[in-house]
Length: 258
Image (cartoon, rainbow, N blue to C red; front, side, top):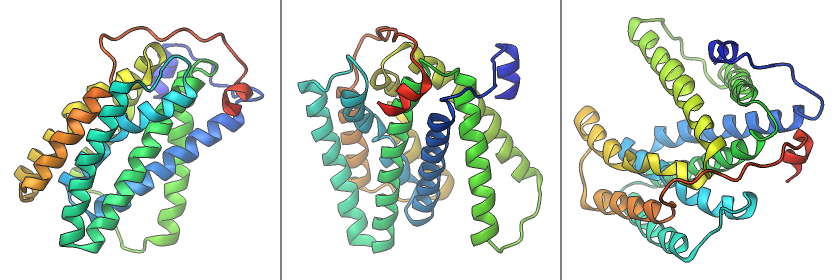
């Protein structure tokens, strides 16, 4: 992120009125990741992947109230209802198997909701604050939060290995680096509910990867939930991609107060 900020010559000085929105974004980011980590520790990778993709549904609902012109139409509402059917299928399966798994699913749903709010908040804030500041605020607040949480709650020793290094490289460079930058570039130019369509294949990848790598069973309810969520998420998107109406530059405190 720092390299990208230097390449685009971003002014990283935090101006008056930017502290509050940057801090709020960092807090949302930290809580969202915390919920995701706890949820994945309790539920399966397949369930987690399917439930994470519900974030486009939450984006459509939140954007209706927070983004001018990104309205919740009848088709989007139908998509929300269908997607909720898929969520209900997964929760019903988890309830029958294990109460801890059901709790993990609930954490994953909460994480998806916060991810959606972060997407919408980024779209609004990027009209007044440079994207590099938005990304670095999330990285800085998130790092500080998780280091503190680790010192308080974790006592198990850890060892630096090649596998750990490769995992951190993938998470840092590919996911938190390129992925976040590309996503923020898109939501600056298109409605958040449109950008979310890119993630529609995630349930299938998650289910298959969990089966191949972790040996998780491919249950009928898992497939039903994945298909319903994908159909619902697809319906809440708008095609073709149209550029987001450019907001007039506003002070950061006005963005935070919306």
